[in-house]
Length: 189
Image (cartoon, rainbow, N blue to C red; front, side):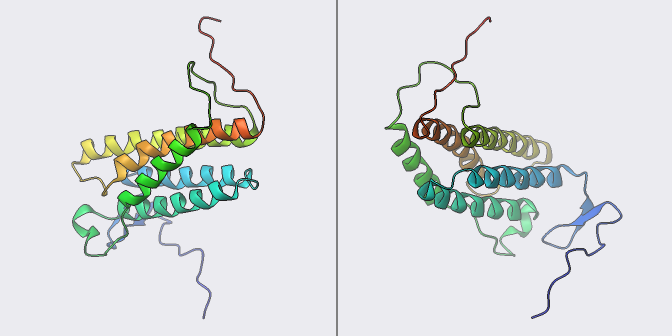
C-alpha cells in the first residue's frame, strides 16, 4: 500500500474541494463552519489528553469526536448531494446517550445555584473551552442555515446544543472528582 501525500497543491490558489468535487473559496462561510467543527474537535482532543484517569468518559468522548467528523463531512457537501454520497449522520441514539451521561454525572453534583466561572483544574478548563467551542459551532450553523437557505445536517442542531450541555456538566464533574472548588460568579465586583 502506498503512502498518501499530505500536500496536494490543489488549494494553493485559495480554493478547496467539497465532497462533490466542486471547488469553492477557502473564505466561504461553509468552509469557516466546518473549520470550526475541526477546531472544536481539536479542543476536545486537548481536553482528553488531560483526562487519562477518566477512561469511561474519554471513550465516550471519542464517540462524540467521530460524530463531529460525520457532521463535518456533511457540511463539506452540498445538501442535494449528501444522500448521493451516503454520508454518515449524527444518530439520535448518540444524543440520547449524551443525555444519559449528563444525568449520570449531574446526579453526583450539588445543585447549581450560581453561575460558575470557567476554570478550575486544567482538565475542567479545557472542557469549558470545548463547551464554548460547541456553542460557537452551533451559532455558526444557525447563521449559515439562515444565510444560505441550505438544510442543516440531520440532528446537527440538537447534537451541538446537547454537546455544550454535556461539556458543562463534565467540567463540573471533573472539578468534583479532582477535589477542586468551583469558582462562583460574583456580580458587581
